[in-house]
Length: 242
Image 1 (cartoon, rainbow, N blue to C red):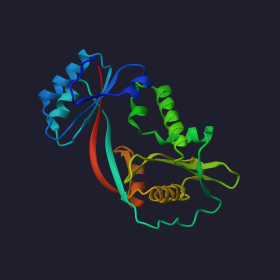
Image 2 (cartoon, one colour):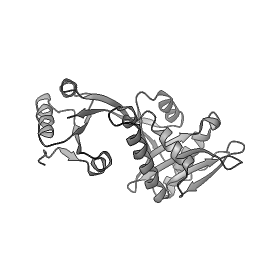
Image 3 (cartoon, rainbow, N blue to C red):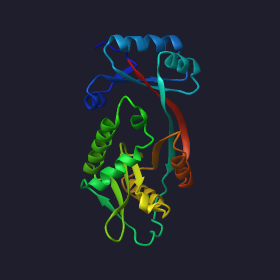
Image 4 (cartoon, rainbow, N blue to C red):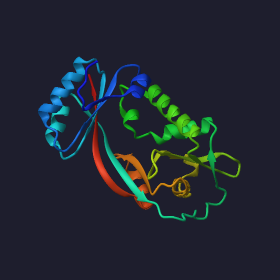
């Protein structure tokens, strides 16, 4: 399979979906001609699904992707929160306890699925609900194995919320999954989980916490902004089925 240097074959996604998947990142200087040529090369190489991460300023490239049948799956928003030293937790809501989790449970799996409600994988009908759930279940197992899952529970030990984060380097941690059970909403459970994630990330030496959410997910955008996160960048994610 011959691909241009700018195209990345995604082994993990290919194994998950059962066919070749690749990604192309298009910067602000990307031309419509170059993007069209690369899409044609991917088609000829046997790629079945191509993710295109396009800078919103590159309108010509976006138009070329859309003309080829690309679907704007996500307006991807990256938020950043700088972490101060000595982060302390605010008082917890009455009847709520926080802890780190390492064991898989159906309750955590359900919350992992809820966290992806607005994701491009959930919204792409050609991927399907079964594959979406398998993806988020696999993601949950991964973060549990790394010991980076914060869980809120009620007095009767029911799971009220879950936040999983990833610390990929010594400076930046990223929120991977975050969801609050419907019965525990409007009790500041989400804010407490974010604070705990800040504390845990700071203990690992990270100086900032990031999170990626979707432009259509207005509740999440408002939530992170209320938690002090600032918008870092906006990107357009297209799905092109070949």
